[in-house]
Length: 53
Length: 386
Image (cartoon, rainbow over all chains, first blue to last red; front, side, top):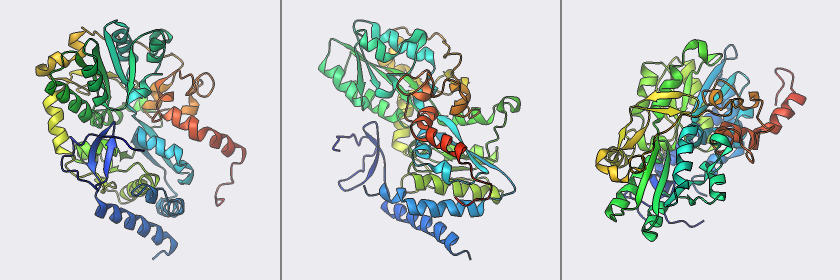
């Protein structure tokens, strides 16, 4: 899906960024480092059940 | 898509479910409210309720913009749209919301009113620019997520000096509604005893974490802001369980990849330049709440549809059999309404909760109703592994 959106609310958005879009407007940028961190936390929570300490 | 698929991994979801099951105290119950309709939708769509332990209940909150808009304001919009000079621009999910006397925007459109469905508020500005002889009104609704885009549309119309553009503002404030739910008198709450909130995703990208602090510190209700993907919701539930078990009540952020503590300060500044808080505003299900909604500031009066067209809202009632109000307060489940799935379906909604994809009834009808039936038929013995 290709859609033109406004980045007036996230002025530092640059090509290559991922943004959260709502009603045609970018509201926030996605932070790739924190995204990895979340996945690591998820994996850790899951692992702890698989092998309880 | 990157940053979406990873957070929908079914195998990881089952492991997270096991983690939640391992950490809940079997000797007690847990009740959390997901405030936001986006979470209600995710919980129904991905069957998260079925993955949760039986002593943990998710209560669906009122964070569905279409659902909380009272009938009187839809009546206002229909009256506006019927004026021959007016073109009313609206989000699509408002079209089928029942208004007074069996009307809806969809029926008004079928009867000849000039009503256009738009995706972005900027579409309404483009229409006003292209059709200068029409009085173009944007029917603006929603929480803090949709307010900044409305402000952008207003500033764009101002920059283009459009004389035929106005906004009918119905923007509402999330923290005020959360406060109203917590302050519901005990005798009205019934079995409702919320112990924590899954905090909204997109709303929090704008307002940040601070507005929830009073709920954690004064009311001792933990809040965990969560993303909209199923693993986000499950991780947030696990974080809430841990807070309750450890007798903590903090504002935590599961959605760290997008939400920052301060939120989007540029959007906040734009909104406070354009909007001010109303004295009060009626919500479906929650009644009239003081300082719970936004109107245009006086310096933007020429863009204010309420002033331009002299809108005086008349309070109107829902279908008396509709339980939308109790469902929005978390006091009833969709299936406890006698209209649910009989005369009220997404094709012929009787109440607003059946209209929007974020409404508890629509989500339950679309994704949940067969499971309920199945569960009754093959209810497992207590303690049976699923």
